[in-house]
Length: 167
Image 1: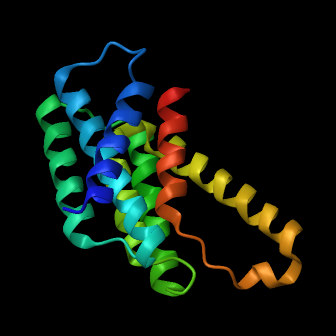
Image 2 (image 1 turned 60 degrees about the horizontal axis):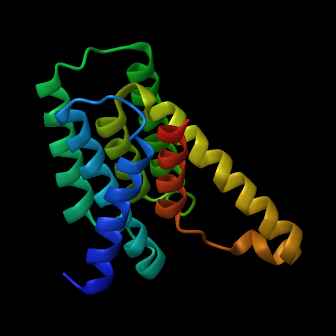
C-alpha cells in the first residue's frame, strides 16, 4: 500500500472512532466503525484521484461489516428498512442514469448500511445535504459552467458519516 493510502486509511478509522468516542460502545461496534472509517478514508482517496470506487475495497469492507452486525445480533429496525430502501433507490437511479450516479456509489451506500445499521439513512441524507451545498456553492461561484462538473461522492459520503456519528 502506498503511504498516502495508509495515511488515509488510518486517518479515516481514527476520525470515525474519535467521533464515536463519546458513546459507550461494544467491541464489535468499535470494530465496525474502524472498518468503515478505514474503508471510507481509502475510498475517498481513490475517488478523488481516479473518480471510481474500487470493488476490491468496498465489497470486502461491506461483507465484514455485515458479518460483524450479524455477530452483534443487530435486529431489523425501521431505520434499517429505510436504509435498505435508500440503497435500492440509489441502485435504480444508477441503473437508469449511470452518468448521474455510478454503481460504485451504490456499493458505498451499501457499505454505509452494513456498518451503521439504523443510522445509515441519516448518514446518507447528511451526505446528500452536503453534496447539495457544495453543488449550489459551485453553481453560485462558476455559474452555468458548474453544471458539467463531476464531484467525487466518496469524500462527501465520508463527511456525512462522520457528522452523523458526531450528532
